[in-house]
Structures are given as C-alpha cells and as structure tokens.
Length: 528
Image (cartoon, rainbow, N blue to C red):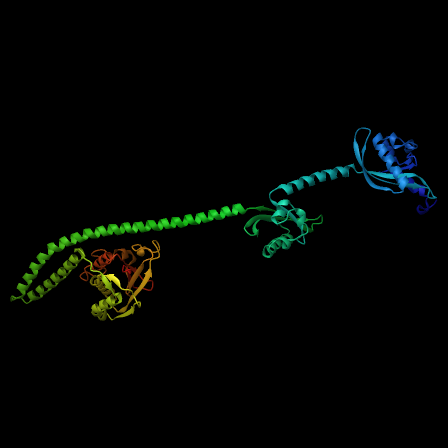
C-alpha cells in the first residue's frame, strides 16, 4: 500500500471535493460543468455530483445571474487573468438569497493548453449580514458623534487623536475632523493647557480608571466639563481613551454672575446693617440729647432753688464763726458745716454751668498750645500722684476754630479725671493728629462729619485700672462717677461732652488692651 506522500493527486482532490463545505467546480471552455463537489451538489439540490456534468449555470440560476457568470468565465479564458474574491449575491430557488465569495482561474491541461475554468465559492452570508449590521451601527454612531453638540474624541496611548466629531474639530480651530486626525493637544492648544490635558490622559492610562466631569478651560474664556474613559484590547491592555466634553461656558458665567450678585447682596446687607446701627446710634444720641435738655432744665431749677438757701446758710455760718462759745467742739462743727456748704455750692455751680445756655466764641486756635496750657493748670494734681506726662503732639497742626476757654475746660476735666484714677502713679500720654473722613459707615465716631473733611484727633491715655465694660456707656451721663462718695460730682465728663457736642465733635472713652483707658476727642479741623 502506498504511503500518503506517494498517494496519487486524484486521492487528495477527491478528499477535498468530498469534505470541503465550499462550492468547488470545474468547467470546460463552453462553461459546462466537468465536475463539482458534494457541497455544491447539495446546493443545486442534486443527489449526486455527477448529475451536474454537462450542465451550465443556466440550468441552476436565473438567466441574469447565469449570464454574469458566463461572461466572467469568457473573460478569464480570453485574458488568462483570474477573478479573485469576488462578492456575489445569489438567489436560491426557494426565494432566499445568499452572499458568496468567489475566485475563478483558467483550467489548463498538462501541456498548458486551455481546457476550461475552475473555481471555488464560499458562503459568506453570515459575515455579510454582520458586516452590514456593523456598518449600520457605525453609521448610526457616526451620525450621533457628528451631530451632538458635545465634543467627542478618542486618542491612542501617544496622545494622538484617532477620532473627533465636527463640534470638537471646530472647538480646536479646524473645519473638519480629518484635519485633527493624528495631531496631539500640543499641536492645537496653548502649551500650558496642553500640559494639563496630557497630564489627565496619562492619569487615566496609569490608573485604568475613568476621569469624570472635570472642569477645565483649555481655551481662554471657555469652560468644559470633560470625562475620559480608558479603552482596553481583548487582552486587557490600554490602547487609548475616549472622551466627551460638554461646554459649560454659559453656566460658568451665570454661576460667576450669581456669585457676584450674592457678594454684592451680602455687601449691601452688611451696609444696610451698618446703616441701621448708625441710625440706632443717632436715635440714641437724639434721645440722650433730649434727656440732657430735660436734666439741664431740672438742674437749673434745682440750682436756683438751692442757691438762695445756701447763701443764707453761708451768711449764718459767717455770723456764728464770729461768736465765742464755751463748747470747744462747736467751731469744728461749724468748720465741717462750712465744708459741706462749699461742696454743695460747687455742685450748684457745675449744675448751672451744665444747664446754662452756651454761647460759643469760636476763633482759630493752636490746639497744641491749648493742651500745654491745660497741662499747666492740672500740674498740681499730676505731681501729687507722681504721674509722668508724655506729649505726642503732631507738628504743623492747622489752626482750628474753637471756643478756646471751653475746650480748655474740656481738656482740664479729662486730664484731671485721668490723673485721679492713677493714685499710685502712672503714665499720662497726650496725643494729637489729623485724619480725613473716609465715609459714613467706616467709623461710627466719624458719622457727624462730612466725607472727605479733615478731623482733629485729641487722645488722652492713662495707665489706670480702666472702666468696667458694663459702665463704659454711662461715663458721660449726669451724676455718674466711679469715685468714692464725696469725691467728684459726676458732672465733669457730662459738661465735657456737652461742650464737645456744641463744637459738632464727638468724645468717647474706651479701655486700652494693655491696661488703662483712652479718651478720644474728634473735632472738625476745617476752618471754612
């Protein structure tokens, strides 16, 4: 028995014809079948391949289809050129259609003489249907990609664009997606923006995780929300990424406008709250002013009612002092009564000073000189308590229109009060300066003055114990004092505030963080 390698060629041909699922056939020069394989015989509906011998395609196909094949075979025999992988649509006798892939070549004998043709056809209907379905899906996807307003793109692992839709191409400054193909962000964007985009791409490739809705601005004045998703091959290796960007420029501008509006609204609210606080302050000042008027009228009435009896008592004391008494205690009693009358008379004097109509005699005054005069008047009080005085008087202060005597009284009252609180000694600082009004609302203490005007600031600082916070708001009220009973009338600072108010100024007292108190007097420095 011959080995397989020695078997005749017809054995191999027979095996192929019997087992191949493809349609194999041989024809003579008249396109008559010389032989077909079993698969083609079944396709023709024959029981045995030999039944096709001598027949043509006209016996098995429609005249139109048979004519096309006949012409193909004529061309092969005339030119000697084969037809390779021709796709043909075949119609079955039952009305069904099928797609076949056909190759045909000339058939020659051993001497090279043309004796016909032979060919092989493979049914590719399933592949064709899959290709058509894939083509439809591709066309549908392309239609979606090209027509959605969002920017769609894909890149390989080198950052080169492999897919772009029209919207993305135009965003990058190109007319068609084809112009972007093969380019990278470095070819299309500013360097800084390209670096950021590439960094995001690398992050997606390295992490194998998507990047979702990142807000970015690769082009000036335009904002995008970008998502990028890695692409893997069948082995799980990264081959690139696909991305989609939605332009949110209008939303971003709207958000910024809303934030700006909110900020402006908050600022307006704060200004309104501040204005309300100022209004309340002015209201309280008006109420306080009205109270002061009532207190002034009451004080005037009391002073006049008490002044005459005091004068009679003083006259009686003078008479009694001129008499001689056997009891040695009586002169000391009369002396105490005289001291009490003197204190009462002093209170009456301050009440009258507080309640009397105030006439102003304003002239340009050197405030620094006025301060030095006041310090001279209280030097005894200062020396008695071993208080050190430090002057921080601004140079070249402009003359200010003031009632010199009344402002000197203010300074004497404030300096004396500061000296009295430093019974164990301390430091008294007097400071002057000028300032410009920055506008209503910048400082409540400046609200009495017109914006842009100049202010004269006088500050008196002590190192005493300060004033309890709960009492700070009462220091300028009539008869209020932190001194022990019998020391002070509680009218000195009240008279001081009245005089400052008459000058259109403000006075306030605050505790210093480092200890002690600070009295600040603010006056209008404009002399016009």
